[in-house]
Image (cartoon, rainbow, N blue to C red):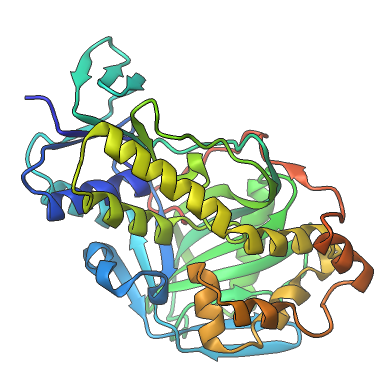
Length: 403
């Protein structure tokens, strides 16, 4: 029997939509098609609980592998402990929950797709799957028409010889040497003697020097007094951060609903897509009409509105890349983390109020005044084109990837 909804791409956006449909519309048959063997790839997605609307937290709650009541940040001239709840989802748990939640026969993994259209999906082997609605959730590796930079990273899950002593995550440790652009280290304590450490950079180049960053992780662990027993897993990749341009959006007229990073459904400055993916999954699952035409139009409208709502955050990205010298970029975040906690929560959720926006830009800028004014007027240092192909996020030794 043909599925009512065929979702192509079993990553974060596609998987969350499948879960939302299974819970809200159990009368509709959903088929989730993924080219890889596992749903969700090999990732860790982390988020602030305040990123997720209260009415949709049921969707992510079963996926959470670790939770904390707050987090720390560290900068050269400022450190702070914040009380915002923080959560992490692992792809292993994501895959297991999807398989347990969707009816038998609803998931195809290890299946490549050659083409899709409003009437169904054509597999690489030539087989044809007809569907009432088709959703393209395959993601993207490049972003034609967009300007900005990249948040690139290498992370390792470390098994230590003794407890690390962390009570909560370090979401940003920018007290480290600033290399190439704004650099910070991210540390998640998954167990008393297991910690995920990631070396992250805001840069105009998507090239990830894996060996260099892995060595810096080793140096960081040593500086914390941690003795590494074993590297359990490793990941590398980069996320787009957008300052300007025009994304490739669609009006839904072809009847295919497009969701995920391919239609710029992520926070322009952080690159994180989980909060947006949750909101869109909930909205689509609650549509009174789940026909292909209705889903395609609703997804297209959502992507357009999301892009328009991100103008302020794209301005901040321009200031990060266009006004600050690379070695001094950390001062922008150091100043930001002196602001009120509620403002910080709303920023990450993409819901900054008018007063929040004024407060973030008020006062003496942490960048040269002339450069800041130039960015406000649409100028500043040249920005990178994001149509350069990103390096794929690949796990080197097994267990985990970030985001």
